[in-house]
Structures are given as structure tokens and as C-alpha cells.
Image (cartoon, rainbow over all chains, first blue to last red; front, side):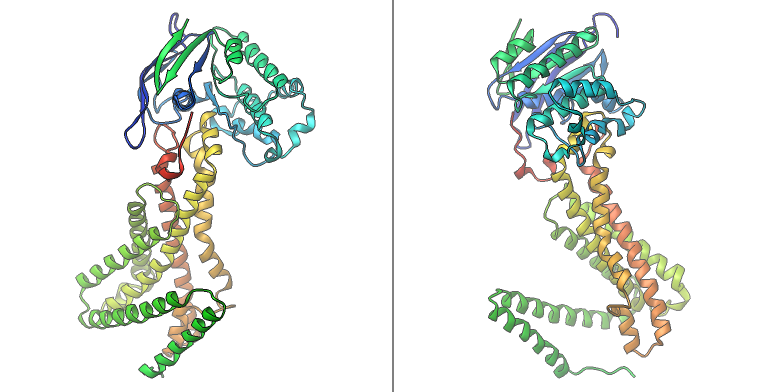
Length: 226
Length: 270
């Protein structure tokens, strides 16, 4: 990565609904490596839409650069394998937890990756999950456990940016702490190439996981700090 | 050998529908009006097509045959869309393209490569219209089932699809399970028919040929050809419509355009 190039930069990002109403309006953001951001705002202000748009999951107008390179059809899958969106309702596929964790390894983008068995077991243990957790039917695990699976699945593929959308909303306080610690350790491992962007309704959590805050209202940035 | 039917004979058959009506009334099924409407449409539609075919068979004109073929194909394409619950983008166009390409190609192969032009060049109407109709009738079922299943799968699997995309998967990796299930569903009726043909029922064409005095072995040969061309037309039409629809809901940026499937049911919030 070239010196002084932001890890992620969006310019004039806008999104409109099918009926023409504005959902996101001319968002400009610059995320540097090592930074911890949080997006705040009332329900319906556009936080989820902004995170999804940063992951380029939905069509939007504007420019997005990743390490100085414009993101387009030629590199979108590579971009998404490095900038991972973690939804509040963590999705699962049919099968057990292990199959869910291995899902990324079945994709062309990650076919050369090996499953980091030891790390997976270690992460599970830290959440108080024994090895039989991996054999449980994914449809039988709780909403909080799905959020744990989603985090481990994302970390397995060595991302650069995590877009965490209310990613701990279904977890108990102790698991939230472990979750935040694991994300922080992952960030500290490579501060020159990684960053986090959280969406959280908890003021306490926002204080713990971020150094930079951007406030949204009706799809517009109405303030940021510092 | 062929025994013609009088209008009185047809009336006896029509009276059998009254039994259905009586059952509907007795069990309060509420199907009497629908039965009466369906019976009336059967009579009117078949009578009309009878007169139309009489005329077409008399004139044996290629422009007329092709025009009728276009009308039949268009009706099949729009009927296929009408039965689908989940609205996919540009469904009608996808259906028209798929029905036209698959049914006409398969019918052309049948008439020119299998039967041979010399065998029917003096009676094109008697061959083109029935063969095209046979293929269309079955292709529209496959297309209809395939499109419906695809819409259903894409809606049900939204979380899984977006998960795969968000992990760096391609649009094909995200959509292929839904595509495969849709094609499989579209093919089920014809596969079932092929498995039981001759064991449970004698198909219409074979029955017609036997009634007209053809030898059973010759009728069977025709029926085998027909089963295969129907299967081919259904497979081609279903695959075509499912792949076209898949392309409409995933763009080149590997984004899943869920809102295009059913805008009313999709209210994403933040």
C-alpha cells in the first residue's frame, strides 16, 4: 500500500430508494489503517445502509477506493473478501456449525486458504464453547451464537476491515466483552492494514470500540468526532 | 376405422361434469362456478380452434401457419408468467425469449431432422401446429415452475446469498443453489411422465394414433419421439428462463437486487 493512502475512502456516496426518496446523501469518509470508527444515529438514520454500501452489497452512487484503487466489477469479490460486512442477524447455511465456518473456504476467492483449526478452537473456547459446538446443527444455535459463528468465519479469511452492524446485539455481557477483545486483538495484530467500523446503539460500547465517530441523521452525516 | 362423434355424444361426456358439480355442492367445495366456467371455456376454445384448424388445413399457407405459431407461442409465454407468485424482473420478456427459442428450435429439429421435410411438405399445417403445441404445452409448465421456484428460493435464501457475497463469493456462487433447485423443479413433471408413460396411462398422441387406426408399434415410435422432444424443450426452456432471471437479479458488481423481486415485502431498516 502506498504511503498516506487511506485504507478506505468514499466520496459522494448516495443511495435512493425505488420511489426516488434519498436514503444516503453524499457521504464522504476516509478510513485510515489502524482506525476504529463507529457510526451513530437514531433508528432509520441509514447506519445499516451505509455499512452495506461500504461493503458494496447494494447499488449506490459515488466513488469508493480501497488502498487507493477504485473498486469496480474487476475487483469487487476481492474487495469483499477483505472488507467484510457482519449483519446483525447473522446468516447461516444448512449444516452444522463447522460447515458454516468452512463456507468461505468453498469459495473460489479463498480456495487456497486452510482452516485455522487451532485458532477456531481457541476462539470458541474463549466464548465458552466446547468442541461439540462445532457439531451442532446451525439452525439450532441461538442468535448470539450465530453472531459468534459469523465473527469467527470472518476472521478465518484474514480480512482488512470489519463492518460490524450491531454485531453483538444478541450476546450476553460477558460474550460481548470477549467479542470486543477478539476484534481488538485482531486489529492490533496488523495496525498498518486493518480497521474496524462499528454500528452500535450502546453508548458504552461505542466508547469502548471506537476512536472516531460519525453521526448520521436521515442518511446524512450531521457530525463527526474527533 | 375411426369412429366419429355426434354432438349428442359430446353432451353425454359434458353431463359427467355435472357429477363433479354435485360433489362440489355436497361437500361445499365452492367449485361449481369454476367448474362451469372451465367446462364452458373447454367447449368454446376447442370449438374455435377446430374451426381455425379446419381453415388452416384447407389453405396450407406458410405465412398463416407461422402467424398461428407466433400467437400460440405468445399465449404460452404469457400464461407461464401468469402462474408465477414471485414476480421477477422482466419476467414476460424472459418467458417470451425462452419459450420461443426452446419450442421453435425443438419443433424445427423434430420436423426437419427426425421426420424429414419430404414426409410433410404437402401438409405443413398438420405437422407444424400439433408438434409446436405439444412442445409449448409442456415447456410452459417447466418455465412456470422454474420461475416460481427461483423467485421463492431467492427470497428464502436472501441471508445465505448475501452472506456468500459478503465473504467474497461471486454472484454465481451465491445464486447457484437457487438456480439448480429451480431447474430441477421445472423438470420434475416431465421426468415423472417419462417414468410412468405406458404403465399408468397412454399419452394423448399415442391414443389418438391408435384411435385413427395406426399400428401400436408405429404409435409407440411417435410417442417416444414426442416424449424426448418434450423433455428437451422443457429442459431448454426452463434452463433459459432461470438463467435469464438469475441475470436480472444479480448485476455485474455481484450485487443481489433483492428489491427487484418483490418490492412490497422488502423494507430494509437501519
